Length: 508
Image (cartoon, rainbow, N blue to C red):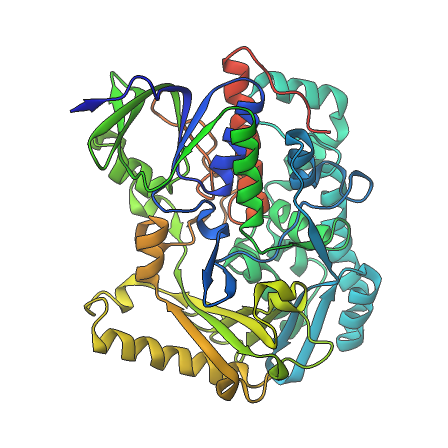
């Protein structure tokens, strides 16, 4: 056994996803020493970037909230406030359309930054539901107005809760009541048209991978209202600019990040986390450990004691992804084409594996991501590890199966990008097995989802059953998405800093 006392820190962070990096950066800025261990050669997890033959691809996320200014976003512009706190510059490009939807029956609608234009376009498609449309989206805006007035912090921090409750008593009470409502039930109180309700479902599915009935109203309000206030802003240089900026902040204040350093065990003694063991056997000790792994990876793989195991059925498990990273001839992208798109061929199968196509063309906003005369098309659909486990990785059968799935997706995209198949110059494919391996995520999953009827407050918080072991990321409140895991990092850092007697200053 190798023991490394000289590399110990106040806090060890397992994984360099955005949630873990956010917590580490804010703690380090406060003078609480942090040490981050990352399995890969680069940071970011699902929000990282990678390069191939002159292209820089987003590994996953590409729709980014949280970069608005204080006047438009209130307290929800977490990226802006965090990078301001760290004095790190992350430049972004404004995206005027969150997503362009291409739906059955010729239903095509861009969800634009201009809320009035969006509502008018939706009402033009469903004139008989015009009043209900405006009332439903007004409900989302009302919740957004409450959230954007409240400072970010931990729901487990009594001092924080008391101060917020005292400063905003009515808003706090209203938010508590709305936290038990779903997006779908709220929509159905105003809207009856089935096609329109399908649209509300795909609005939820676009980021939650669940229909509106299973999506908390609070989460929906952040994503579907902030697109009209703080807006969507894409980082120059790709999604990896966000974790890169957080890493700069960690190092700036004296923190350390160790790449190609896989944590294989969280060291627990007498019910308390003491440190971690790496794949090479080296042990590192700290006063607190933060896991950025999924709830299943944390308690069923990294924590050896079976008493802490988490039943797979405790939460719904989101599927994984099959992804296409394409370098294409620029001529295939028409003038005025938007960056983000969602394609649904049939409402009956939109929420089945592979039923919905998500894709982006980030070079529309940032041409530097591809060689001259080229664009990037990044497309993905849901998938499961079980569909691929019977293949030997790297075998001719595995490669042929990947090509077959990719060809089918490209064919479907040609509905809005004619000639795409002939325009492909570079093709990189990733199956759910790829996500499981590179992201170290249980079955490559997008993470745990709430079951229908569960409240957002039933999501795990930052503390765990093990003393001094904390959690961040999409397994914790408030859930999936880069801005959500950023919030989890802020709340975790806030909680730990107060326990260390060094409470965080407000993010301004």
